[in-house]
Length: 116
Length: 113
Image (tube, rainbow over the protein chains, first blue to last red):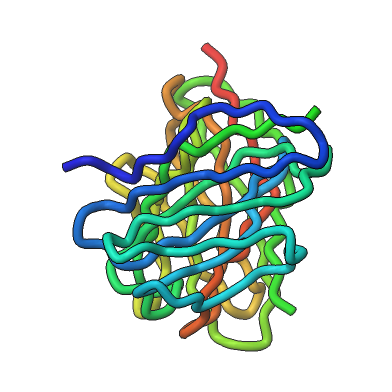
């Protein structure tokens, strides 16, 4: 079975631009979470979506937004990019999203974003 | 507020030696605890987790961790490491019923021949 897939793998943008990152969950998984991992730090929670609804949001500005589609894939959008947005963006899927705790999250390989 | 602290940023160790990666958490409510491993240029893989019940949890590749509520710790141990265990290890916590997982800053385990 295919794992969580993310595209693109790498991306270079300049300050002020907009970026869209994509994630396809494991087949049968209905929940997707997004994390930002800055170099040398642990992942930080951005969003969780379940059945196309936002279930949780971390401490990120409104420049960050996301959505989930009927096929459970998801997009993360970041507007007005800043240098500090340079990071590895990880997507994780789980079966039902009924609380991040009990269910195992499966992570994709990430999209590495560099903002110049 | 919930937080996770990994006390060592780097742990160098010789092959076949034992290792302990330390993790402390703070939370006013019940938590679930996790250890994830990240190999270079890859995403995170779940190593083991504590949800409830036995405080000692084990992974299939020889790692184990013990939940200690009184010391708010969840240290990861392995009695004999291999070169292939070289990776970054993240401790994480989630409130029961919560929707987000809080990660520590990570510990880089470097196994030397």
